[in-house]
Image (cartoon, rainbow, N blue to C red; front, side, top):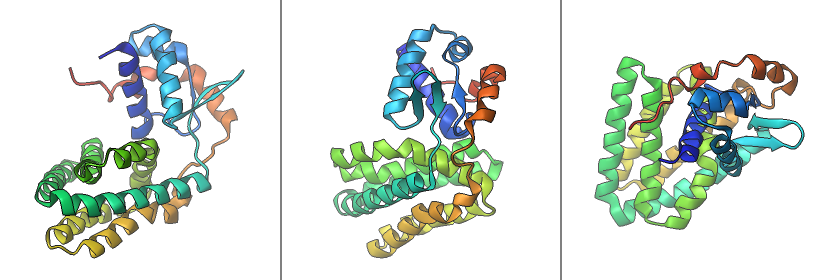
Length: 237
């Protein structure tokens, strides 16, 4: 893995997991030091993160973790709902048995994560569940389009899970219902639950620190302990 790819994955994971906050300024120098590399790969990673919608690079100001507006969230979630609805219908028709196995495997991992309250593992299993739709649709254009919005939406859902009572329980049960209905051939019912599952984020915007004031974040950039922010995002060898 190149240093640029490592920097990209580590910063991306820290943003998605919530270790880095919405609107928080990012110090190229301090992040490079925390990751044990020069500034060049971190700078290149910032450019890719900008293209993925996870950071904003402001000339003469700095680089900041993205800070979505309510309109951004609504557009992103609607975009995702449209893509996943199409993907699940195609995947279930084209590769139903293989899709069902992948969904059940993700549910097993989610159940284990819930039992030990490992919410990072739950998040990853949740993502695997939804990625199965796109991958088993075997439509590379759907998958490519999905990747545009997926990181930002995952970051939002992580914050939703921690800020809304009983969200994880509801979310987990919806995953089970979707998988059960697809296996039973009730695709329209599964898609109806999937749409609700995705769009719940629009009804919970009050739980998010959307568009924070950057003034309070700038102070944080000089005191931020990036070693702690990246401590839980080490990459597997």
